[in-house]
Image 1: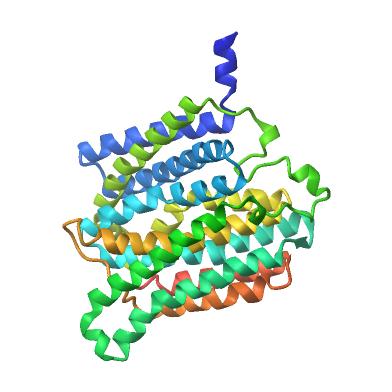
Image 2: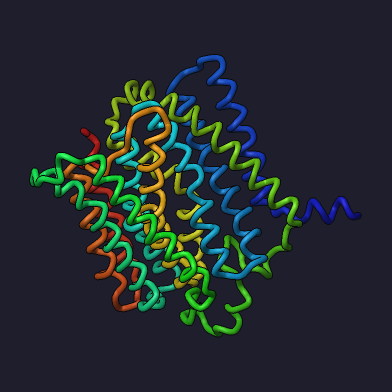
Length: 375
């Protein structure tokens, strides 16, 4: 009886994620060891990475639910980027700087345009006009705009050939440190539960207050034992590290066979695989008409990439033994980044979303992605 209760602690969805990630991880290992087809290994490793990211999200959600909504949000944002962090590290060690830069920008674009668009579109089709806290979303979008401004200044300095351009690497490191300090300073602010405003758009806020900002509301499933949460989180993180290495090892052969550019691969494929957690969670909440959580998770993911992951990779690249990551991006990446950062406040200023706004955001993302198809 006790064994049956332990099994019931994991939902069917979690069992599917665990079994699927295990099968795909083993498949990636076998193909890598036997030097199997690069394209097949690349595809299986990417799918395994996405499922491992989902498992990390589930475990993080369970861990965060023990310490309150604010802590849950910070844990989900931080630990949810583990797969992308490992992909960035192994890519830099392989000298694939353009893929890392494209993936970082692509992560911001995929969250701000594609996923936000899908959330608005699918949520709007199902519920009509949806409402969310314009104040909270506006605060996050403002921080995104400011962080993006910090990211693009090194490119502007390089393009305009100012005196600081001769110190490209030093300036990039300084910028990364400043952004990281802002990120660390923002954590206590994010830990406050009052930032996780409850959804007024679907009825009683008191009822919603009983729900936690994770993959499932608290009353939809039992809480895992702490030991199980830690074991699954540690195992999934280790798996993500291994699979990321195999994924990166097949990047160049696969994109050569498929005739893909490094820019498109990083911007679309790597970015979407590495951000599977936020993509799934944000859209799921929108379809439940819990738009405050949906918008907060999606936009916070973009913010974590620009303020947290990017500067961390810049600093880590100094010690990895491979290529150094700089903040001098390709002009088209900068333009796309600025467009997204400027567009977000215009979309969310009224606190109302419609399916047409969502479709427009998806369309803009598709146009940007296609523009990188040829490099």
